[in-house]
Length: 95
Image 1: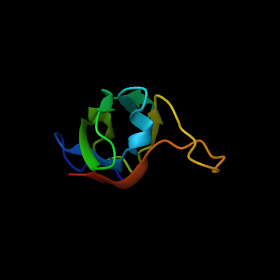
Image 2 (image 1 turned 90 degrees about the horizontal axis):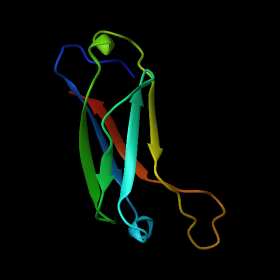
Image 3 (image 1 turned 180 degrees about the vertical axis):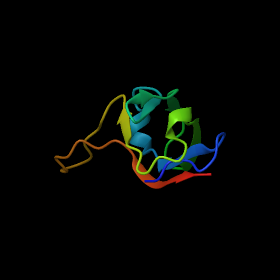
């Protein structure tokens, strides 16, 4: 996606954390932008959508595209599904 158009704009990430993900405590989400690790966010409630905002590195202003990576502190398998699941993402936006 395109980077911020102006200094001070933030990255907003909206995701849903399944309640089963919190069985072993809060779930940490780490976002990396162009290789720069941003302050982590933490999910403490499951089953509801949550939006977190992240300050973007100054060098991303006007850059197109920027590379965004997301990591979670653990994954879970649900029922017979053999995939390792983390979060369900709704939106990534810069404003």
